[in-house]
Image (cartoon, rainbow, N blue to C red; front, top):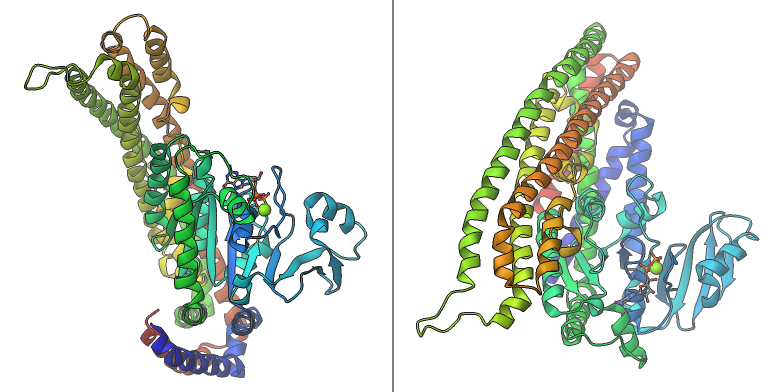
Length: 588
Ligand SMILES: Nc1nc2c(ncn2[C@@H]2O[C@H](COP(=O)(O)OP(=O)(O)OP(=O)(O)O)[C@@H](O)[C@H]2O)c(=O)[nH]1
Ligand SMILES: [Mg+2]
């Protein structure tokens, strides 16, 4: 969709909205689908309506202390969002355009309390809030920074973990037009950050998603920075393929714009300065200039989620309409019996899982032996001579670089080996999960019972989730080598000054290899425990889905007879066909 098509997009949106409105307002259908469903549809509608009226919203997300507020200030060229070394952002701060600067808290009871920028630091706000008659819903900051004429920017508190993900932040995610996700190059791009992106950001299908790897100024060399960015890019390509990754320094950019002293240049300034510039350029070109297109796409995405959920619900009812009350009761009883049987079957699967993991562990050991025999050759190559008989590497070079060369190679082999097995184990676990679901006969039931947006997370991302749940610590840098391997490396380092480092490495060669094999064993044991636990939780999930679907159906059958349901279904499907067709044609 380009801007020439924007009118068509808007027409489509209007048509789909009208059709869905008629659908919800049809009394027979509404009665059949139930109160909850109608209120859900109304929520969707309200959200979409709100969306069309609200300014374009760019939301920043990320865990605590990734420099989110600093990045926003750097974009604004002003210090509006509070920044601190301790958890700072306390409320959701909406920053939008106003001719004069103005700050106020919007309370949950609708009341507005005027504040100043100084008041919204965590420390002050915590004090002042005690006197407010209700909790703060969000803080609104108005300012005349030029970028705010185009878009509204929302700063959020650090996300802690998925369990306690604040409902309000979640509303902002659903409501956002585009997302900036802040990570820090000083902290690893953790499994929980990945899981958050996979489970909460990706399913929303944002047209624009930036991953900002912040604090590059703190890296000691470009090589270090490149390495981290490469890792983040590799991971994000897998879980949020549409994301654009930039390596930036919010703090440097803010100081630069304010004319303050900038962080020390450790040789990467040109890089992060350019990256920030490119990020701002993309904001201009891909967001600000395209904001109507992005907005239309976003609304169309929401509408099609709404349609998909409705269609899934209709499918569920249509399955159930084929059964009568007695049959349904039998089916529920049968389901419970099956659950019991499968729970036993699940226990029986565990020894097989154990065997597969042992097999992988042996394979890993074999790889390691092979790798170490090849590595010996590369080590000896370090002493090689060129055609003229000169040393390929000077002894100073070897002195300086050999140790890190060795660590890097061993670390890489170790990481690759476990990474690839982790995928295979995740596949085994997911496959078993699917087998259980089909044995329970709840494939379709569960699909129908839950909205496709949820379903999408569960199926397409299940493997990623499983991988994350089974996250074992992956070692590989000097500080984080597995314990046994590290002990040999330390030994080499201690002796390094005394004699030729290559000799020391070769002397301790078998020890390095044997110890890494020892470490690998521990890691695989850990993997097995986690995989088994994940299998249990998948089973629980399937069972709950099945029960829920059966329950829903039984309730429905208490109120209507099958013919009535069938007839209304035909009508409902017909009414839904038109908006579905339009949405399919608008090629999201
Ligand atoms: N070296 C360096 N420090 C930074 C950078 N960006 C932010 N910081 C520092 O990191 C700390 C946290 O920055 P904030 O912007 O408050 O981080 P935040 O993610 O908004 O934190 P919360 O709101 O508490 O979740 C502050 O001390 C900043 O000065 C950067 O690019 N480089
Ligand atoms: Mg903050």
